[in-house]
Amino acid sequence: MTVSAAGDQGGPVGQGLPAEPTERMHGVPVTRPRGQTVLHPSREEYLGVVGALRDEGYLVCLDVTGVDYLAHPGRTDLPPEITPERFEVVVNLLNHRARSRVRVRVQVPEDDCRLPSLWELFPGTEAAERETYDMFGIAFDGHPDLTRILMPEDWIGHPLRKDYDSGRIPVQFKASAERPVDLPDVRGTEAR
Amino acid sequence: MTATEDRATAAPNVAQTAEGAQEMTARDLVSEAERMRELGAVLRMSEAEAALEADLERAPGDETMIINMGPQHPSTHGVLRLMLELRSETVLRCKPIIGYLHTGMERTGEELTYLQGPTNVTRMDYASPLFTELAFSLCVEQLLEVEIPPRATWIRMLLTEINRIASHLLFLATNGMDIGAVSMMLYGWREREEVLRFLQKVTGLRMNHNYIRPGGVAADLPDGWRDDVLRLCEMIPPRLDEYDILMTGQPIWRERLQGVGVISTEACIALGITGPILRSTGYAWDLRRDMPYLAYDQVEFDVLVGTYGDCFDRYAIRLNEIRESIRIIHQVLDAMPKGDYRVQDKKVTPPPRARIDESMEALIHHFKIFTEGFKVPEGEAYVAVESPRGELGCYIVSDGSSRPYRMHIRAPSFTNLQALPHMMHNGLLADAVAIISSVDPILGEVDR
Image 1 (cartoon, rainbow over the protein chains, first blue to last red):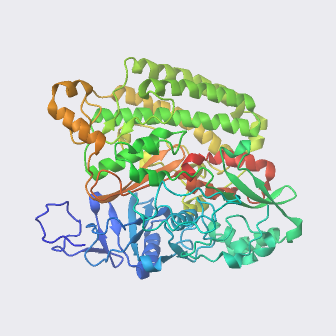
Image 2: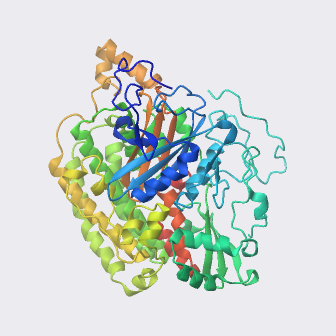
Image 3: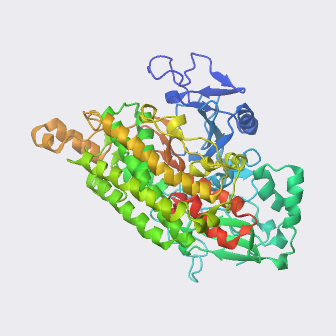
C-alpha cells in the first residue's frame, strides 16, 4: 500500500513515502521505521540477501518468525514496489562488530506458502523455522527436519493463522479412542 | 521409544499438515550424510575433523539404544523431553522434544490490550518475569514513540537486576541439586526467597509481577525500599562467598563440571546462542554493555567471560554475575532520581485513583483505558533486552488498534536448547544432567 500524497500525513521520515526514492541495500528496498532497519527482499532474492548480510558481518540470526496479515491487508509500512501478501516471514539479524541489527521481511503468498530455509546459512534457525512452520504453515525448503515443534505432531491447523478460531476448538487428545476422525473445518469462522 | 516412522513419509505437506514424527529417528533409518549434517554443518568442522567424528559415529544400529529422558524427570526443569541415543554410557545423539507446556501465549497476546499484555508475557519466563515485561513494554513504547520518565527507567533497572539475582540463585540451587549437592538447593532457595520477598513488597507478588507496564511501572517503590535493597546487598555477598567454599573450590564439584558440555564460540554464534552460554566460551557479548537499553550506559559493570565453554564456566559466570548485579544496584541506589514513575500521558496511563472522584475527564480516561485500551500507531518493532538467559526480544506488529496484531517473544531458552545435542555429543549419560542444568532452560519460555 502506498501513501496517497507525500507530506500530508506528516509521518516519520523513511516510512516509504513515494516522493523520495526508496533507499536500497544489497539491491532490495529498505525502510527505517522508528529508527530500525528493515530490508524487503522478494522470495527469489531472500536467500541471496540474507547471505550477503551474513558476509557483511551479520553473523547471528536471532529469530525467524511469521505474521499473518489476513485481518490487516492495508498496511502502509511497505515500500511501494513490494506487493503485500497474506504471510510475512520476519528474520532478525545481529552484527556484533557494528553493534547493529537488521530485520528482513519477506512476503509469502497464501497459495504457495513456502520459502527457502536459512538452515545452511544459520543452523540456529532450525527451531525457529520449525516454529514458524508449526504456527503458520509456511514450509521451508531445505530444512533438515521440518516437523511441528510446539503442537503435537498430529495437530490439525496452524494456530497463529488469523483464520484459526481460538477458544472454540475441540480438544484433540492423541491417544483417545473417541478422537474425532474428521475435525470440523475451523477455517473461515469468525475469531472475534 | 524408537521412532518407527519412515523418513520418506515425513515430507512437509502444508495443506494436510501430515508431519512426520517429531521424535528422533532410529540410527538405521538415518543416512550417514544426514547424521554428519547434524554435527558438521553446525559446528563448521573441517573435513579432517568431520572424518574423525565419522569414525566415532560409525556404530551399527543394534549397538545403540534410544531412550527417553523426561518429560517428567527431576533434572529436566519442568517438561523437557530428550531422546538420547546411547552406546553403553556414551551419548551419541540427542534430540530435545518440546511443546509440553505450550499454551498459545502469543495467540493470547493478540487478544489482550497493550495494558493487559504484561500479565500474559510475565508468565513466559517465570524465573525472571520482569525481563519479559520489560521487553514487551520497551517494544510498545518504541511503537508509541514515548519517552518514559527517568525514575521509571531506574526503577526498571533496579528491579530487573534484583530479578537477575533471583534467577541466578535459582540456577545455583537447581544446578547444585541436579549434580548432587542437595544442600546447595536449600541455600539457593533460601536466598532467592529473601529476594522474592523484596519483589513481593514492591509488586505485590513473588512471581508474575505485572509491574513493568507500557509507560513506566505500576506503582512507585514502597516506603523503606532503600533499606530493604541495602539489606539484600549486604546479605547476599557473604552468602556467595559461602557458595564459593561449598562448591567453587571443591574438587568434587570441579571434577563434575570442568570439561563437561564444552561448546565453542563458533558453534554458539552459528546456533544463535546468547547469554551466559555464549559468554562462557570467552566471547564478551552483553546487550547491557554492547547495545545499552534503559540507562545501562551510565553504570559501570564488567561483562564476565569464561575460557573453556564448559559447565563450570557457565556456573562461575552466573555466580559472579550476581556480584556484578549487586554492583549495578549500588549505583542505581545512588543515582535514583525523583519524579514520576510513569508517563503522564492521559491517553496511555490510567489516572490516579483520587482523581477519578474529582474529575469527569479522569473518569472518562480511566474508563477508556480499561475497556478499550489505548491505541498504538500502526507499524512494527523489535526490541531486545539481556535476560539472565540471553537475548530476550519482543516483536510487535500493530495495526493501529488497541491490541497487538502480532506479538512474538524471542525466547533465549528456546534457541539455547539447540546447544544440547552439541554439548552432549560423545559425553556420558551422567553428564547429561549437568549439561541440561547448565543451559538453565525455563520451559515456560521455551514453549510459550
